[in-house]
Length: 105
Image 1 (cartoon, rainbow, N blue to C red):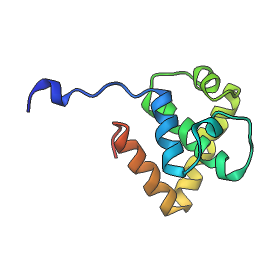
Image 2: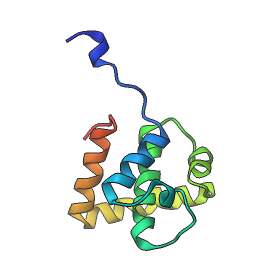
Image 3: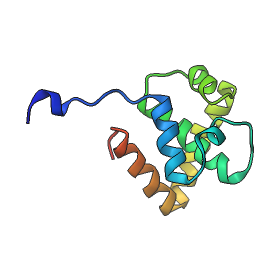
Image 4: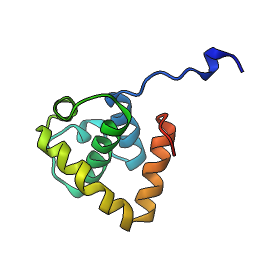
């Protein structure tokens, strides 16, 4: 295997938004939109969680990318682990997304 094939481009918030939207069957515009519908809020929380974990971006930068305040990002990062602990299907989906985006499984 050569060095070029081992290289993976850094993960971006935009990539995370696209992948999470696809995985959850919502439009990317909904992820960054203003809706508070449950079918969109959970994927948005997952995307914010992964953005903090897989990029070098700050809470304020992630908030801007989602058209939210940094405290919304902080809330998502704080509550999502409880959902992951209690929902095996969600946990498996997030682990798959993390692997697909270049993070560790």
